[in-house]
Length: 495
Image (cartoon, rainbow, N blue to C red; front, top):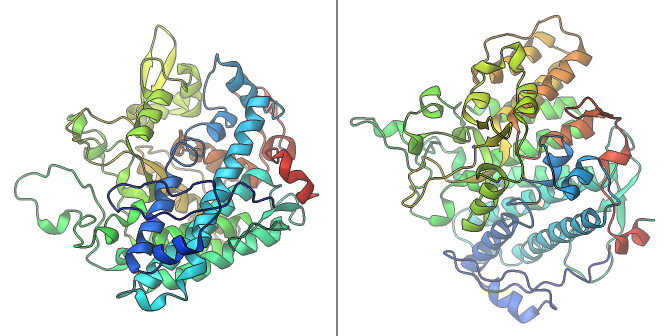
C-alpha cells in the first residue's frame, strides 16, 4: 500500500481538548518518545484516535450519516450527486474523490493505532493498575474495527470470493508499501486482533464489574429513586475510565467478533460472541416511558441504554447531523410514502416506536425528517449525549438469530421477536418460516433499526441480497454495487 499520505506526527494532547493529532509530515522519533514516556501520553494518544474517528471524515460523518445510507435507498434526493450515488454510479468524479478520502482517513486512524501498539509493550512499566491491558485492548479493537469496515467497503464479500485481493492489513508504522492480502487473510487479521483484545479487556475493563450500571447521564429521576437504579457510567474518579460505551469496551470487542465471524460464515463463534453480550444483561432495553416521555428534554431518542459502543459527537458533528436529517431543509429525507414502506405501515407498522418517535412529516412537501439525533438548545437537558451508534444490542439479537437458525429455528425467530416486542410490535414471526424468508425478514427489521446509521448496506453485501429502491427498481446483488472503487494510486499495488 502507498503510505505517502500517512506520515504521522504524534503531538501531545490534552484530555479536555484534542489538539492536532494528525499532521501530514514526517514522524518524529523524538516526539514519539516524549509522548509515550508516560501512561498519560498513551491515554492522550488513544483519546486522539477516538476524537479523530468521531470527525466528519469518519464516523461523525462519512461512515455513519451519509454515503452508505444513500446507497441503501433510504432517502429521496433532488441533488444530482446524491442521486448518482444512490444509483451506484461509482464513476462519478465526486464519489471517486469521496471514496479516496474515506480510504485515506481510515488508514490514517489505523496508523495512529499502530503508533500506540508499536510502543506499548516496551513501555509496559509506565502503567498503573490494568491500564496497559485496557489501552492495548482498545487500540487493537479500534485497528480491527477500522480494517473490517474497509474490507466491507472496498473488497468483495467473503461469501462471494474469499480469495480475492482485498486491502492491506497494516500492523506497523512505515513509509514502505504494505502488500494487499486476500479477503480471508484480512478477515483472519481482524479476528486475531479482536481475540487478543478480548483477552486483554477481560481482565481490565471496568464495564465488566458488577457495580458498572448503564444508564442516562442527565436523566431527571423522580424523588426517592434508589441510587442502585441510577447510572454509574460517569462516576469513576478517573475521567479516562468513565463512559466506557463511548469507547471500544469488552462487549464492543465481543460484538465486533460476532460481526466478523458471521462475515466468515462461522456461525458457532458468531453465536457465542453475540450471546456473551446478550447473556451479560448489561445493556437494558429502552423503556417506553423514556422513549415517549412527554418532556422532550427527557426523551430517549437513540435507545441509548442499548448502545454497546458509540462515537461521541462534538458541536461540529451535532450540526452535521442536524443539517443532514432534522432541520427544515434537511439534506437527507425520505418521502412519507418511502418511510411508510420501510416501516411496513400497511402491516401494522404504526405500532413501531421507531416509526412513531423518529420522524416528523411535512404534508406540504410530502417529506419526513429524522429526529433521532436532535438535541436541545443550551443548557442541554437531553438524557443522553448525541452520539453516532457503533454497535447495538439489537444487532446481537439479529446475529444470534441468523447464526442459530439452522440448529434451532424456533430460538432464532424468538431472537428477532425480542427486538420487535421491545419496539412495540406485538405480531410474532411464524415458527415455520423458511430460512430464505427469515433472512429477508431480518434484513427488513435491521433496515428499520439502523435507519440513519449506515449498517444495512453491510448486511445486504454479506448476504448477497438485491437492493430495491422505493420505485421498485432492482439493483441485482453483485460486486458492481457492493465494492467501492479503489483509489487510483492504490490500484497498482492491488494488481
